[in-house]
Amino acid sequence: MLKPFPDGSAPPLIHVGRRPVHDRAGAVVAYRLLFRDTAVGAVATPARTAALTQTIVAAFTEFGIEELVGPVTCLVAVNRDFLAGVVPLPFAPGRTVLAVDDPFPLDDVAVAGAAGLAGRGFPLAVDAYTWGTPQERLLPLADYVTLDLRGADRATADAARHRFSAYPRARLIAGHLETAEQFEHAFELGFRLFEGPAVGRVAVASRPGLSTTATARLRLIAVLSREDVSIDDVTTAVTQDPAVSYRLLRAAGAAASGQTSKVTSLREAVVLLGLDRIRGWVALMLLSDSATFDRHRASVVLSRARFCRDLAALHDAPPDAAFTVGLLSGLAEILGLPTDRLVAALPLADALIAALVDGAGPLGAVLRTAVRYSDGVVERLPGVVDPRRLVEAQLGAFRWTNRLLATAV
Image (cartoon, rainbow, N blue to C red; front, side, top):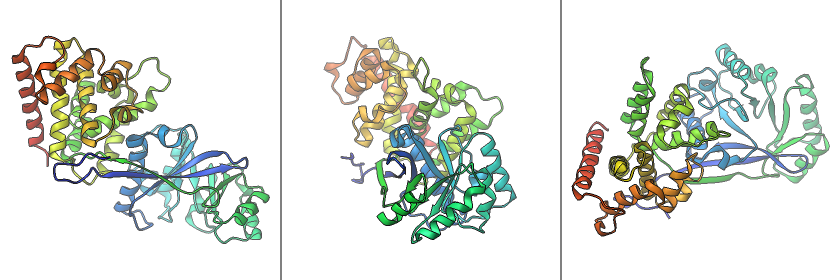
């Protein structure tokens, strides 16, 4: 159950739908990710771009792509803004397929952008294809083509399949199959991939969403835009925004895959992702979020993180890791989520997970000190701590947080 905010409301939910794509053996080989909210209009409007960016941000940061689709391919809708490079694609080429499914103006710039993305290794899909539309210009680049077979009889489906023999690179998906009869026809005609209500309906995943002040995000983008920006500058700016911190830790998961060490702090996440990738993510987050991060929630999370950082030396714990532990602990409390669920998909070092889930180790002692002292349980603090240092650290955390929030909208 979601923990209510001070005004009695609940945290907003992020919704991402996924629709399975099956092969001839019945196995799920891909999922199509869908934004589950009101987003009308099929042209490349700012509202449409915002809806698409929210899908990408939610899928790759709020949930984690492994959590949503596991080891299979995922298809994510893009429009002209993505193809033309107006909105960056912050994830690396791989098994995420860029699906073009809207009849937006497919001009020379968009086609050239699509060719460039394909050349960089991004698989492309043309969805709900109709002959004679501008989408035909993308067929030589397409790795997948979805045919809309709603209401199509056997002869029509067969004719559509044969017309694509000139594009052997593209794998055809028999799409929008609404009845068992349509599926049987597509199967008998030799289609290898199938999608639609007849083979698998959309399942929606929801979780509390994190949003932030536009001011903090713009400040981070400003830091990232400087030519002389350092890793420490970026880390400092990222730590001032709890939601961005959390999302970049999630985004670092893919980059950390296969590494011998896991992320132990936000600074390591910044190093692991690289400045270019972070710029892309932050730009998408700025576009996708319209709500501000509530001042009370921000104060609780930021002051706990800073308090933990300032207490780190008392327990011989690393300050950056202590800040991260305090940040994630505060987010879990505000959202009313079990800590183990919140951190399950994060690429955290064992010491951070042990501190957050079990309260173990020096970092666990830091967190227990911060939480218990803030709650007034001073008789159960771990270790011997000078009361004056606790007062100074907490007041310092409050001052730091208040100065930061003073510039927030």
